[in-house]
Figure 1 (spheres, helix red, strand yellow):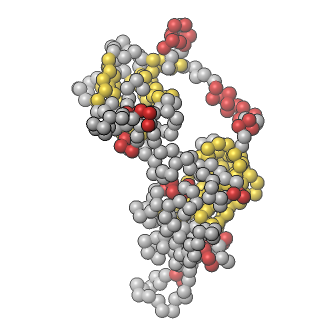
Figure 2 (cartoon, helix red, strand yellow):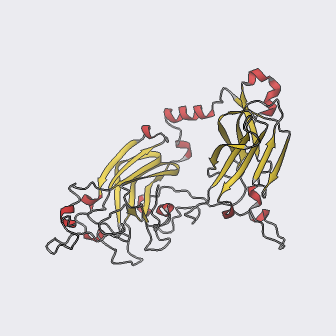
Figure 3 (tube, one colour):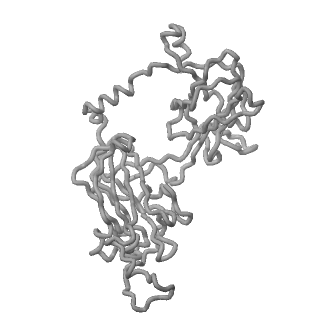
Length: 388
């Protein structure tokens, strides 16, 4: 989701209610008329609604958005179901406290918020929330009263309207903005997650082994460079076509963000912990894969770049190449916010001679294994010993 340069970070929308500056809020770049937030819950949950906390600047007749919400268990957009549509302008038309800057900032007072309650709880894992600005000329936006289109001078006869929102750069440039997004609901117990036949089919499909298994590719030699952030592997001439690589998740401490629905009755309870960390701008790591290609001289050609997902230390991850490769040398380079990661206390060096340039837990040593795909029945019984 694109964010304005002077906006709070995007993930601030999921932070605890009273964390951070009371005057900060998220807003979209100018001229952005629609944004979509995709929130993946920590577990399967019965979601009863969504709460939108109003930005400190409040709404105007020009930037009160249309809200549409979808929900699903699957990531496929085609299989999601629409929960409802709401016109914020219609919802707050009789509530002047939602317009303009907030007048009271007392801690004992609930922040301004709008509830989008579902008719029935929806059991889902993913929630899509779309905010869209009203189209010019719609019933909710009256540009004829708000702005003088005949002259750049102020119109002394124009009626005073509610346009006190400071979401945009100027009063005539409305933008999408929000303070927080809270998802209300109840997590489903683990023993209830696979009660339906559809969930059972999904579990069986996930447990089913692929027709072609992964087998380790033997390596002649390898070397580490640049604080172990670059790994080069050399392969024998008889190596099979490379299909991808396996990588074990790093041990370095990194920011971790999870969002779970909270009970509607405890939605304003500040003791609830919505995030496992207070980091709202998490560090991101990438790995760049390059290979020596025949006929291109001695230059390495970039094959692909992969972004690492959030995972527990030691978690096995598989990355398929865009196409099968035949090469004698392949290189892996760790990129991204490397300096933002630190070692676990038990792994940090106690010596005070020098501070490590990068976390030792980000080392690529003994973490990457190349693999090829083959039918285990064709390779024989001994081939299972080299499975990865």
